[in-house]
Length: 424
Ligand SMILES: Cc1ncc(COP(=O)(O)O)c(C=O)c1O
Image 1 (cartoon, rainbow, N blue to C red):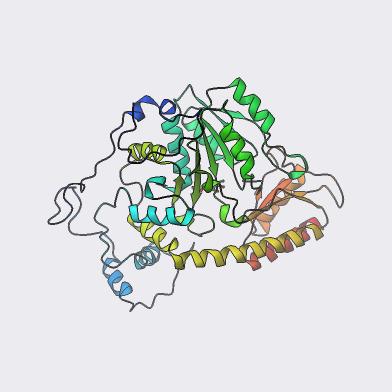
Image 2 (cartoon, rainbow, N blue to C red):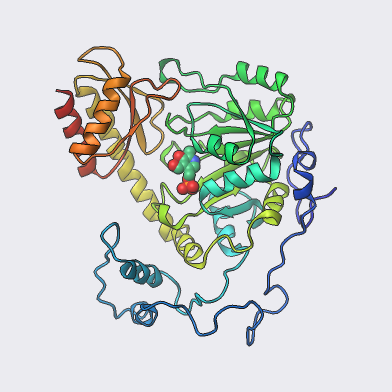
């Protein structure tokens, strides 16, 4: 059965791959969504049961003042801001005349075009937008995996949501750990090859690059070898949530024009500093994008999210992002230089290609890696020192490890100070 609504074919390489047989039959049969406004979108709009009076926002009239530039806003945001302040600030970011009482575009083609241009795929037919990359990951499970039957492969230590989402969708997970020796965290290609031989029906292989919690980029030649392995008939998902912190040219997005069996998730939650708006996306050849488009909830991306995202991926927004990445990467260098000077801090593991570092806690100066002490440090820092990091010692190859997000320079200095103090 053909993919309904498909406008452009994708690459035909590799020869052993065919998407249609991988898609759940009920999903393959879905008609592309037609929204209320596909036929008529101008005039007196009484077709979609919206509220013609307007949004129930005390600040809606204030919005006009702000948008016209007469506001004396103090720019309040974060934990201390009231709901009213947050609403006002969000409204001020929207284009004047935005009708919040109307449903958003189901496609957001202009935003997709900008992302396509930015990430080097041909056009909007190669981009799918999700409520964070978490929604994209869930959607992939839903279109590809039959609950209670299918399985996917992950390469731990890795992002925990792959397993959570597999469990939610009643999908089995086969784990082939990364080669962790020496904190390298690279694909164990031989073990993956064996897994493909023993499990010819695997639907998705998850490759996190740079990895979380490893911070390590997986080189493109290794990803190519998985894509070209004829024993694996499924789809490779490369999760690039942290790609902008990595050396340039590390992104697997460049493989999408070439291979039909690869897709890449990215997000505005990290380098763009927009975790609150929940915007992630999948870059993939048009057939997979069309399947996801046919399946998604019609209006999954809100108007405020799409407007803010469009501003972030504009040329000016990209410049702001690049500046932030350069500051954070400099702060990462500060952590990498300073952490080893603290007694009882062991090796820094992984590639440090993301906005965090993974560091071992020892049981004493020049001692052994120690999970108990790492937990103790983690808890004491959070409960008595006001510094929250993440304990990762339970992950394969991460014994005794804390994962420390790179913050502002002041925050980095604070975590170093507290670690020095606690481990003294
Ligand atoms: C590897 C990885 N992928 C995806 C996500 C989720 O990103 P989003 O905020 O786009 O849902 C995270 C969040 O921490 C992550 O670490």
